[in-house]
Each structure stands twice: as C-alpha cells, then as structure tokens.
Length: 486
Ligand code: JFZ
Image (cartoon, rainbow, N blue to C red):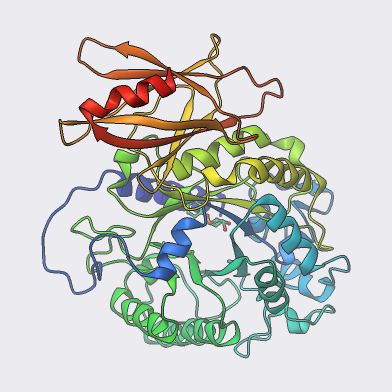
C-alpha cells in the first residue's frame, strides 16, 4: 500500500511538472479546454481579487490525529486509513465517535476574517468518503454521528456572514463507495458498479450545489485515477451541467482530463477549467512559468499535513513571516494563496494555527491594500521583495529584505511610447501614510533609470509596504515631477 501511495504521489508530481512546461499545439479535441485565455466575468474577477484564502481539512481522521494504538503515522494525517497499522474497520467506525463539542463555526469564520481570508475551501468529503453534510446518497455522513448537525451548512452560513466566500472541496476518490476503483473496470460487474459510482458522484455534486446556493466554487481532488481519467467525456458533460446549475461557478483544472488523458492542460496546452490547480505546496518561481493563467497555491503549515496531526514536532513548521512572503509572492504573480488549517476532533483550531492566523492578520490589517485586487506589476522584481499593482497607477513594494543602506532601489520601466517617461507622483509608507523620499539614482549603461526610496530600517523586522503612485508623462513634463521627488 505504501508503495502504491508513493507511486501515486510521484505520478501526481510528474503531472504537475508537465503542467509547468506547456507546449502549445493545435489538434481537434472533443473534450479539451472550452475556452482559451482567462475568464472575464464578475464572479471570476471576484475570485481573482480574493488574494488570500483559507483551506480547511476536517473529517473523522481528526480523531486519531496521526496515531493509532500508541503508534504514530508519519504520513499525511488524512491518509491514515491507508496505513497498514490501522485496521480499516477501526477507521470506518470512527464516525460513531465524531462529536466535536468545541466546534463553533462562527469562531472559525471570525478567525479567518481576522486573518484576512476572503474565501474558504472546506472538505465536504475527503478520500475516505465521509461526508460533512447529510447526503441523501450514503449513510456515511455527519447525520450518522453523535454530532448530527450539517457542518457544511453551519460553515457556509458563518463564513458568508463574515463576508467570506465558500468553495466546496470534493474528493472523487471515495474509499467508502463499493463501486469506486482506481483502475479502469474490466468485467461487466465492475463496469456496472463503476457506473453506479459515477451516478453517486453526480448526485452528490448536484446535491451540494442545491444545498448550498451561495457556494462559489468546487475544488476537486483525487482525480488522478486511470478509471476517472478514462471517463473524460462523461466528466466534461457533468462539468457543463454543474456550470449551468450555478452561473459563475469557479472550477479549477483538477476535475477532468481531455480526450487523450491529459490533465490540467489539454493536449493543445490550454488550461482545463478556470484556474491552474497544480500548485500544491509549491509555487512558481517566475510569472513566465504560468502561461498567463489564473492559479491558486494551496499550502500546508507543516510540510505535508492537511488533516489534524497532533504531533507537529515530527515536521518542519512554517513561520508567519514565510507565509506572509508566500502570500505576497503569489499575488505578485497573479495567484491566490490558500493556507490550510486542520482542526482537531473536538473542533478546536490548534494554538499554533491560531498564532499564525493572528500574525498574518496583524500584517494584513496594515498591508492588505497591497494584496486584495492586486496583480502582477511590469516593474522588474528586485531582491528586496515583491511588487504588486492595482490598476495602472498604484504600485506596492513589499520589502522583505531591508537594504543595509536603507535605500530601496527600483528600476523604472521604459514606456511603450518613447516620448513618455514613467514618473513617481507620490510615494508613502502604507503603515502610516507618511511620505517617502524618492531620489533619482541615475541610469545604467543601457539607459535604464533607477530611483532610490529612502526607507528607514523597520525595527520590528516585519515586511513593510511602500506605495508609489506612478504616471506616464511627456518627457518635457518630467522635470516638474523630478523637483517634487528629489
Ligand atoms: C491531495 C490529497 O491527497 C491530500 O490529502 C490533500 O487533500 C491535498 C489538498 O490534495 O493531495 C495531493 C494532490 C495533488 C498533488 C499533491 C498532493 N499534486 O498535484 O502534486
């Protein structure tokens, strides 16, 4: 089993590497991308402007929390059922104990809002098949637990009340359904069972959209099985049906394959779905790797734990500073950053996660203007940090690596119209809106202009933001502005 999992993960890894080196071709496809280029509608624009999201992995795996019978499972806690030291029957009976007494959807939602999350992705059903909503199509749901109440409903209401959009995570892999399989069905019996599984999957998805009319997106997972890949035409039809049910619905690239079994990007190199979903615990180095697509980065705080694992001492754990850098970096390359939380079996968010949420929130409170609604800037990245940009005129410099001489140097891009030059109309620190002094730092041998922003070292060591309001002006006008900024 362990080998199978390693094999699956290697396959997934290769799949995502492929997605990053897309070669464009042109061949007729029946089940390729339905669109080339990013979506332009309001719902997608809202998704794009979110910047920061929260992921929540919660299910019965939170009860063992990475341990069984005094032994520790070092893999991802939500995969503990696949561990040979945990009997399947024991796992499959955990739901009878699921009674998260401390669960408070409003508290989670408030914490997410205070962190600055604009959307939340919740595991409605992970690979084990356990449903956090009372599905009519299986008995293996929250309705059969001592808790009994609809957790997805509670979360959707609480998050929406805080102004946070909800996206429903749904695993196609379902270890609890008898018709589910990873390899393509061969015998008639297997085929019939798989057909039942497909109908079950469709029913559940329609049920989710019907039950939660405010849900903005579906985040699919577990779609790498050969059996599923071979269902491409049927999945394509299902995707169309779901989109028709919910106009504006946002679905990533991890749902269906194309005619030739290609995932994420079709055989012509066009993105399948609305955004690239390959950036799992990983980020592009440069925007050029992205082919102009929308994308999200989903990130764990420990190395690879999504569900609750009680022992984080077994793993490297990210610091708030690193996560803040990832948020800014993602937005600087037109992506959304989604940070995962794994609440425990009682419904508590662990103190380490609460601490991180608070630190990120404190930073976002001051600096979120550099995140929400921002996108990549054409200004060339420098080693002090990242540029993000709003519209054509507002540039945010988030400085992570404070220059020792206190001068944040920027390279001013040339204007397309060579009669024009780019000037800085206004410069200030986002934290206190105090003006920053901008000095002309001369030209290099290629004629590129540089400015230095006089930026006193920030004592807290916290990354800070300088705002530049920029404008293209005619060359002769430039001196007026230079006086203002020197
Ligand atoms: C999957 C799940 O197996 C995991 O438990 C978690 O829910 C995560 C969000 O999704 O794991 C993956 C899926 C895809 C890749 C890596 C791990 N990938 O593309 O590299």
